[in-house]
Image (cartoon, rainbow, N blue to C red; front, side, top):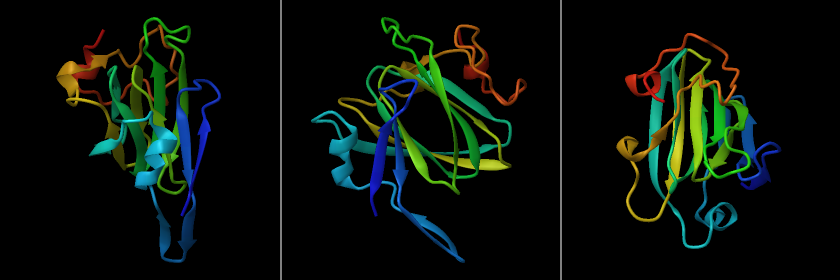
Length: 175
């Protein structure tokens, strides 16, 4: 099994990873990570070291979150989501620009979100399982050390599929 990596057409630092998969009457199988892919995705000396999974219900919106240290290789391993990546690097000429993707388990692919970019997603299916593969140096920046932007900030002009999502307190009260 192999991987194809292309840069996003709107935010060149964001990478889209497509996988060869095998499908038959039983379902689909694909490889989402091999150690040798680190060198294709990450700067020298940084490796994927930490995984997280998230199970969310329909109409849940999570994000926009991120930090200045972590690379996130994200995918939807079950269900269907509307994925948003926002350039949150304050000194970037692209600050506030965003790109969107539909991710689902029927067309397996991952998005590499670099440090300084915000990550948000909305669940379109009855439920979805979201996977984060994380790479960073030093300690992990958990939610108390991450930046958070309001999901419907007028600065970003994101066209979410639902204007009345289920939000956490963190996402509802963010700046």
